[in-house]
Image (tube, rainbow, N blue to C red; front, side, top):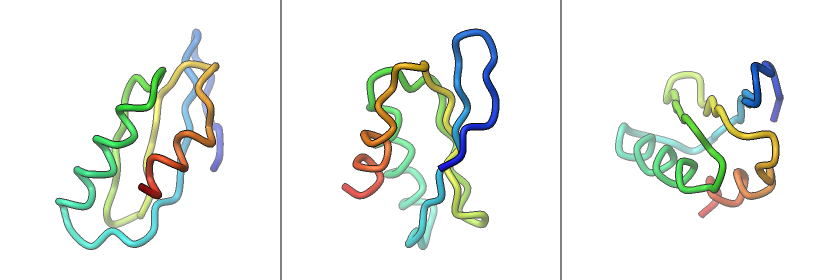
Length: 70
């Protein structure tokens, strides 16, 4: 996981996501990540196998990983 930008009170994180095979997988990962408290925006890319997440600084990053694993 890499934190890239910090703008205002938003932290941008790029998280690798392996094992997705279709658009349905992408949708499930996006929904799961968006339910983590403090997450503002999620964009998952099937081709690059990455999730780009804008979130508050106080988000537990382990919760992001748990959300993807579930």
